[in-house]
Length: 251
Picture 1 (cartoon, rainbow, N blue to C red):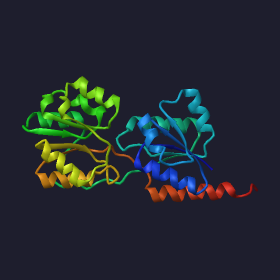
Picture 2: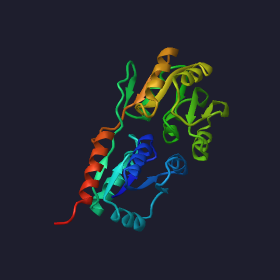
Picture 3: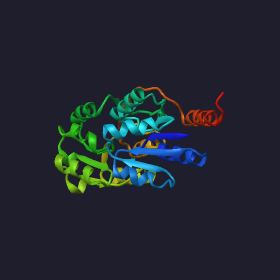
Picture 4: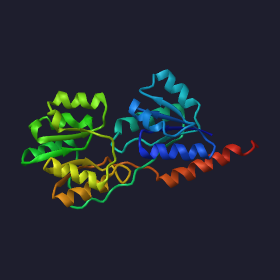
């Protein structure tokens, strides 16, 4: 069975390793070299990084028995393009959903722009943990108020510099992080507001929320897009069924 996984997430690494061990031929597509580096922890899996040319994408999908979208819950544009490619190629498409969190006392906002507007009416230091792509939405705020935790990549650092974020305010680290480390950062920089996405357990959201509560910081949560899909167990059961049917003799 040939399986195509679009990933770059913790779930995609776990899923690809399990399917490989169960005998599937697995190809994982990731958006960046950082994603390639993380996925490479699982050996025996073909990894494709970066944007695929249309011709290569058509050829790739035609070789697959099914496609699993295990991208980040907030990567709507990638999910949309993967789904469309599956429809065009006739490849079965399945969405792996990350479990949602049940935040307590968080301020829910629809997007980064709404979070920035809310914070423009407040005072105090802000820790942004939403990633480099959302940084521009916070340009309405004084850069000195912003402490930014980003991946240690050139692209993310370039976004910070474009925004005029003071270098002393940039925390370039790879997560997820423990509650203790989150608390240390909140304390170190006198953070009043923690802006985050609902990355679920895999993304370290419970540790962020617990740290903010312990430090008296308010959590500003960008709501996750509504979508339908399957759990990890459901995806694995589905793949097992595909594997069994592929071994049945033709009538």
